[in-house]
Length: 145
Image (cartoon, rainbow, N blue to C red):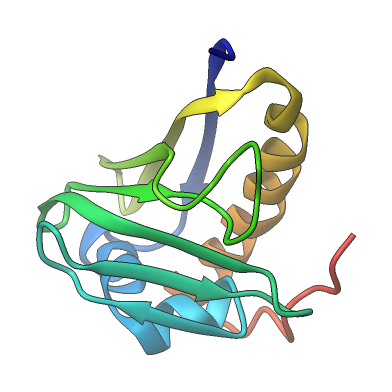
């Protein structure tokens, strides 16, 4: 069994928790900041699926949704030998910070060799979430690699 690691990324977003939560629980809104398309069923056990530019696909299931406070889902890559669909868990906590929101993302269960690439991904995508939640346009999905 491979040892797993917990990855944490935090970002302040200049938007209220409800706006951020909407972008985590709606397929169209999610795809504005991550992926070229998203299938989001925001209920416990509901489907979580992202198709990224280039066709790489993330799949999982929602574990917990607390409106305007927390979203937890499983995560993994179709065809990956190290992070297959549903093999890791992403927890996103939303904390009020004045007129904005602190997003605390914790990604658990990643093999050590996959932490760096996932950190780079989350550090690229959370600023895009910040832009759309504040009403902006982050531009097209970044190219893979």
